[in-house]
Length: 353
Image (tube, rainbow, N blue to C red; front, top):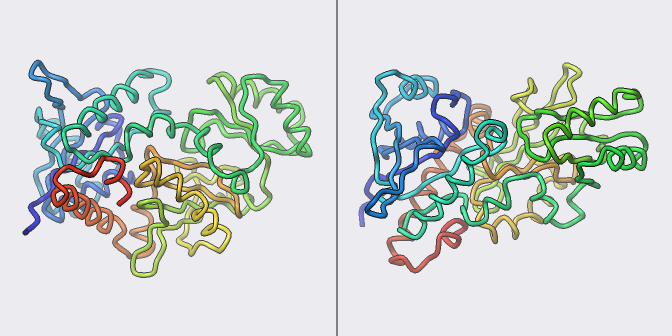
């Protein structure tokens, strides 16, 4: 049976706020280059119409040969960009790529609403990645507390300033404080022996957004962290090369996130990182977290990003390996499985097969 072009949908926060260094844009461009159809949908674009069909207002790029990610983004941002009312149920795959943390202040309803629409279309035969039924529980930083203790740093989650102070004191006056909801290194503070009176200000700044996470400080974090991308629960590896990036910051800023000014280099994960990935794999697979980003320091897991794991574009470019093309080919494989098994396989099973 000859494979027909795929119909792929990508759900983002807002097409207008997408950037050309986002993984979603790279994946979309790679899919277009392979001759597949792509639709990009904002969180507020879904419709459940009177005929009980899930539709969406989507940006639909028409060219299959964009020279780079910036060219595709420019097409999506054009005033006369092609925007269509599509039938979401006719898609082969819908990839959920929105960041709930970006919506906390202005549109707290948006991420949950989109997940509800995504759950509806799984019942109509669309493969939705990551699995929307489990994504709600996996979308904040408490998710990694469900993994085995040996891969987690000591952690306290609270709204109480005194609890944070006690935790920091119990760990030698050092630690990391960050909001429970957040991404990109926003609102992250490193506490050390020189923080002094600033500790109260740090705690106040984080608690302003609700619950905070206090974690033990890991000395190896001074050298940055690893972002190890996983696919089907396992480290993404193509032609012997892992999609693994060391992120570091030599400017004095403790945050290594690229969006916070960090730098990156391609690395091979060491034995500690690979062991941590092996330990978390069963839960990622059980929960249908098809594509994830593990943030690792030493042998500890700092975060698991299952909403918008980024870095595929940097891994592509640094390694000169087509990781993004491998993902698109893997999506085509899943669509073939769905057809071959004629609807027997659940969305959760298709996420991880």
